[in-house]
Amino acid sequence: MEELKRIVLNQETEEDVVTSLSVRPASLQDFIGQKDLVANIRISIEAAKQRKEPLEHMLFSGPPGLGKTSLAHIIAHEMNSRLTYTSGPAIARAGDFIGILTNLSAGDILFIDEIHRLSKSVEEFLYPAMESFKIDFIVDKGPYAKTINFNLKPFTLIGATTRSGLLASPLRDRFGIQHHLDFYEPEDLAGIIANAAKKLSLTIDAPSSLEIARRSRGTPRIAIRLLKRVRDFAQVNTGSPSITLDQVLHAMDSLKVDEQGLDEFSRKILRVIIETYSGGPVGVEALAATLNEEVDTLVDVVEPYLLKAGFLRRTSRGREVTDKARKHISCSKK
Ligand code: ADP
Image (tube, rainbow, N blue to C red; front, side, top):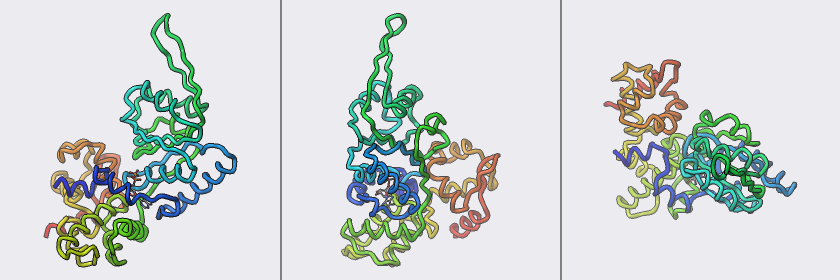
C-alpha cells in the first residue's frame, strides 16, 4: 500500500531524487509542455542578459511534481549562474538564513522550495533582501541592542510553492514575475516519458508512452515513476529493456493504477466520501481524520488532480464527489 500511495502522491521520494538527476531536463529546449510559460521565461532571460542584470525574482506555484525545481535549475543553467537550493522548513533560524544570503555571489540564484512554509521571522529578512539587497540584523537586547547592516550581492530569488494562497501578500508582491504551472496534457507527458526512456536506455513505442501518460495524473513526476515501474515489469517478465503496450497494461493492473490514473489511495478517498459521508459535503479535516492522513497532504497533493479531473467538487461546506466519481467507483468495485 505504501508503494501504491507513493505512486499517486506526487511528493518527492529518495528514488525520485536519484532519478531526477539522470532525467531532469537540462535546458528550456528539453522542457516539454507549459509552452506559454516557457516562452515567457525565455523572454525574461534574454532581456536580463541584454541588460546584464540578474533576473527579477520569480515565483512558481502549482501542485508538486510539475517541474518547478527543474525550471529553477534550467534558469540557472541558461543564465550561467550558480543555484543555491534550500526550502522553507529547512531554514529554522534567521541566523541560518543570513549565512545563506551573505554567501551568494552577484547573479546567483537562490531557490527556496515550499516558500510558504518560511517562518515569519525569516520572512522579515527576506523583504529588504529582495527589495534592496540589504539586511539589518539586530544583535543583543535592550540598551545593548545594535543593528548590523549587511550589503548583499544582487541575486535572484526563485520561490516555489504548492499553496500560493498561503503566501503573505507582502512576500508575493515582491516577486516581479509569477508563474502558475498547470497539469500537463497526455501528449506532453508522452513526450516526457519518451525522453526519460531514452536517458534510461529503454525502448518504448508511442502507444505505450501515451498509455502511461494517460495514467499519470497530468504530472511528470508520476509519469517518470510509472515508467520505471513498467521497466521493472518488462525486465522481470521478458528480460528485455523494450516496453510494449501489453507490459504497460499488465504493470498498471498489478499496481492497481486505473485508466484514469487513480490508484487505491485516490479511490479510497472517493469511496470514503461516498460511503461514510453520503457523497459529501465533508470538511477536509474530518476527511483527513477518517483517512488517518495529514490535511496538507490531501489539500496539496491528492485533491488538486481529483478536482481538475472532475471527481471532486469544492463547496463552501466541504468536499463533494461528482457523478463521475460515483460511476468510476461503482465500476471499479466489480
Ligand atoms: P516540482 O519542483 O514542481 O515538484 P520537479 O521539477 O522536481 O517538480 O519535477 C519532477 C520530475 O519531473 C523531475 O524528475 C523532472 O525531471 C520531471 N519534469 C518535470 N517537468 C518536466 C518537463 N516539463 N519536461 C521534462 N521533465 C519534467
